[in-house]
Image (cartoon, rainbow, N blue to C red):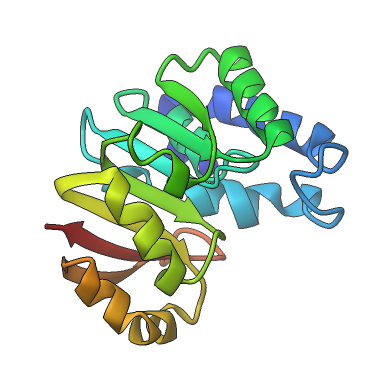
Length: 200
């Protein structure tokens, strides 16, 4: 399934996954239980977003951490430019090192919190994985996105409850076309749930 989802880019995806498995725990990027399930729980989970990205788009990944989903998507979609936003210096060093090692010219890493870099970043789409609740994440993401762009935020099984709790944040941000998607049904063991909305 990884080969199907990554296509011609599977070799680079394997290289990234192997490096993350070998060094991730030592660098504090993943927990001790994660290496055996990197593919099933993290890599495939992230790459399922790739078809949602617009051709030639500028995309911001908020709180990139280990590069999930930012580096994974940059591997899968070389036609898209990615700005990986990460406040922690150790993780920034990892992201920059991997982007260079994997020869990903479509990746720029910015150190800082999303709230602090909104004057530096203007993108067509923004994503995030395991960052915060929608109530907090929407105000972080929306200022980074141009009018007519989208936020595509990876969430857990309780995403519908989060959307209900974030009604006021959604209204304040003037989001439209609000939708919940479940990606990977019939393809992978652990599907990916996404909150998607248009920024007006």
